[in-house]
Length: 483
Image (cartoon, rainbow, N blue to C red; front, top):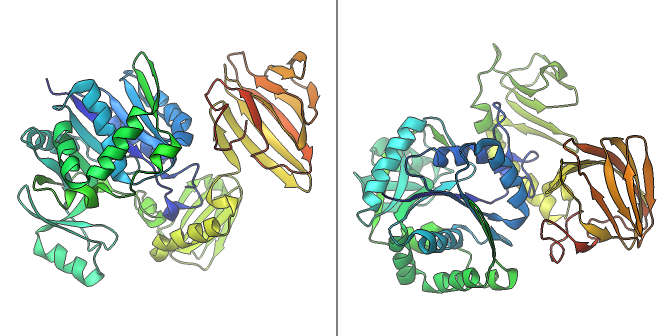
């Protein structure tokens, strides 16, 4: 029986979907109207295929716990999962190489990898399964297969594949509008979906021929990685000093445009890369005026408004005399854009990042392995947070140089280490933690723990933290992250 290994590449920032998508909460974690994230949909898409042996996910190490939380909600069959953790992005070729080496070690050269993007949408699972069956058959004959989407419009944001049956004639870059119209009229061109299917041995042999430096670098990183295993679980943590030597290149440039073994499966599977707010709007049916409201419907008030997409969970949004807008409201950022130019939102994201503004990176609510914190107010020499700790979770044993903290429990029961003192705090009880005190917060109950934290000090940056012990393996991390 063929071992089929769905492999999910979960990276990128989703800059065109700012302000919902951010560096530490990227596009794959966006929840759609059915409350499933794009990542969860990708997992189910692969995990429910016949002969799926396990799911490999290649992602940034900072996204591991969010990824595991998403999978835990949908992996009801407890399919084995493995994670290759990158310290930073190096494009798709290194990710494919690492996943291939892991699958080769576990299943041999004949294992079939099905590489999926974490942030695409496929509406026709039956057609997708049929396309995968064709792709597996070609992969077993030594082909490296890509999935070509039958185009429905002259898109300029996608790469194209000129095809003749299953034969790839050539790969085409993102075209001009006029060229895209010619591609659509020719009937010979397909959108390049960025999904692949191949036997592990075939891919590694092609990499050894076409990008040997990259493959050797990734082999070295895998050999020196920190590994952890448990029943149905494996984690491969690539080290930053090693991974920095790996070339930054896509699998298309590294292999697909050079190999003589490329093949394509043309398909019509209801595919979208959900690359803009206009694409998100296209998933919904508008009202009589073409308006779409996502979130709290009672918070949107529209007068003489048409063709407008509004997403707001909390604040009231009012519109008067406007047409064809995208309005995305979050607690700390507001986007207003012409719907036809929603692809250009990436320029706002790029400017925020260039200016060092945190709004490109984090939301006001930040996810951590143990739960979440929400910044309620950030003032001169003080900061207020709402902290929610999951049942059985624990923050690290830590210390701050520049700030003191006040913890007030509002819901649940907290076990607290504060210097040399161990405390149990219930609702409406509090403790004060001076700067320099070792401290830890634990939730040993089976209910959520909620508290308010008030920080006071001359420096309140998230990097003012020294970890002494951490159940999530972050005690010696070089990457700052709160608690």
